[in-house]
Image 1 (cartoon, helix red, strand yellow):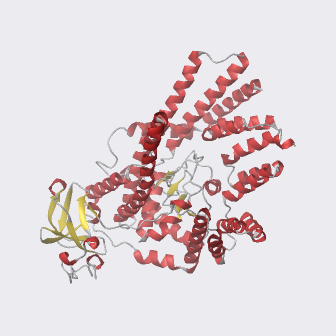
Image 2 (cartoon, rainbow over the protein chains, first blue to last red):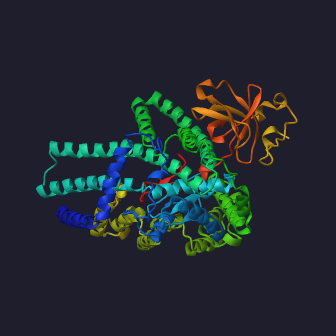
Image 3 (tube, one colour):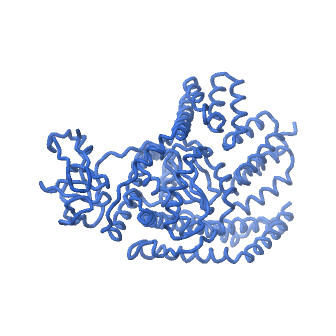
Length: 497
Length: 126
């Protein structure tokens, strides 16, 4: 078996090199990424001149990490709780994005703005230029300018090709995966355990990856966040939005962050308790938290606020501040379609919370209201309705809601996860396997379902396929390799009963 | 009517003065500048108006009462008994900020990221 892996690995390595050689822009991005990493150790961004002054007006060059706008949308659907479907809201946000993008001087930037069915304060962008904004923001923003600030920040990442950083990180992870696989194959062929030197080399490589992933890359990412804040300010000014909105938006984020601090304090108290009973475990918990804090990808928000304020003072101190556009924002939120859709999703989120708190009747009442009108066939409200209907014993309602959730235009990952889980629990491994394929196809061939598929293949006794998929997973998507490898350790043939 | 709800009407500098003095405003409703974000804060005669002075961060002595806010966001503040306008981003106030993002709903917080992403904020911490 390991000989086959060794051969497959060799073939993959050759194929990988050929592909890399064939992509000169990939190599250029890689070089750019390394140069940018070096820059992060030098002066703070925006100190002497505006960030926009370094952005050359030109046609946007598509990132080598881009997977295609539609595929990217499909993958991101699988990452969260689905997208909120409201054409009126989408059009409004895309108009803001177009206005901000035009201000950058860079033309043909791909992508669109998507509202995530997520009650948190979150937003992110991808190499395909798509901008994802969680609907949790909507009730708390007070002007179009604040939404423009979020979009300007995200678009800045795209314009500044910050996603190239992931090229470096991905390259390193992949190199480590290949090294690990190579060593395993070598051991199998030679039929001996690894020597001390080989073990040391592997440990060195693993340590380098950890240091890079947890300390160097996050530091670089924090610089990128600062740059995105500052270019965002430039874009707001050029697009004739109020740049103050970047500050007020960050203040809201800071307020949200303070709420999560309580959870952190609870953690410290818990670590203290553990320390009293088990010093080693307590130290481990604290070290893990220290590492987690070191690896935070964003600078502390108070610092971000000061940096943005200083930047505004330095470069736009004479600028007459315009009034933020509060009317346009309020009017958009009062559009019947937008109001109904956001209200219904809020009900669905509340229903979920009630369900988690053990109040199924209340949850069911909320969920029924959530899956009405314009969201009657949306996946997320129906998914919650199915869960709450099951909880109150209305099984036929649950099945009907689940069917609507499965057929919805905007799919939700959890529906697929549930179908895999239920079928597996009932011993219907073939059906569960089919759902992993459906999920993968629906969500842009995302790697997320590979561990489940490997586990199910082993349960079906298809061990060679499971191993081949584990190999593919390890080499192509190193971030999933641990879960894939663990899945390939599960007992085989359990489904053959 | 509370001080912070009063706004400057128009750009001609017509200020709606307070009916109540700072001392009569309940403490919990008083909005104050509690620190300066920039190294120096310029003082203006009106929103987007003329500069009439400046205060360095290390010269800031205690809170400034915020009297009102202009439509552009400028804050009218009481500095040692005199009123000035300051740019809103340059100062930090104790004004409560509404933000109630519901982390409880984020059951599907993103796991090891398969895609390369960049964001305004991080996900809710568990």
